[in-house]
Amino acid sequence: MPKAVSVKADATVALASRGFDAGKKINGRKRHLLTDTLGLLLAVLVTPASTTDRDAARALLLAARGRFERLARVWADGGYTGHLVDWSAAQLGVVLDIVRRSDDISGFQVLPRRWVVERSFAWCLRSRRLVRDYERRTDTSEAVILWSMTMLMSRRLAARPQGPALMGAA
Image (tube, helix red, strand yellow):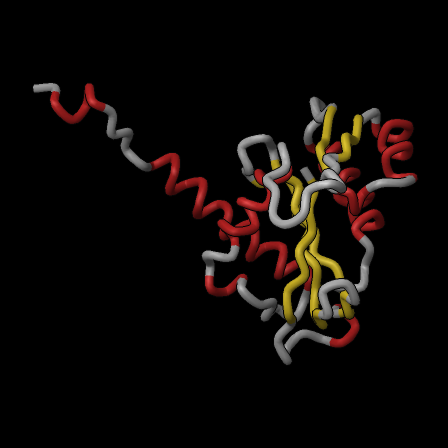
């Protein structure tokens, strides 16, 4: 599930690696995540905020396809429509399913599959360092996101299960 979010860039971020996201009116960078169905990170890409989601998705899907040969289906939101659907099927052999929002419903609506990657962004933003982009280079920014998700996943693996069999058994 690829998804992008724009974040403001600090003054230390070079002008060459930042851009303006006109849709969200943010001057900074855009973080693109590809997650599995549990919301765990598969691939990350940081670009200037002016980069379109479709252009970044090509690079993100190419990198993910090289690392995960079994990748066969990807769910995405409406920002990834168009030639990307045909390109991913022809070049990568990956089916790109677009999760569309219904036109007759106004306000907030939980969309199937799309909430998973939204939750992953929320997990990342719990790290103070990821609320803004402070890094000078985009690869360092990607590394900070990977580090944050690694910390999250390792805490979950190390957590002791607290089921009824473990709590009262003696």
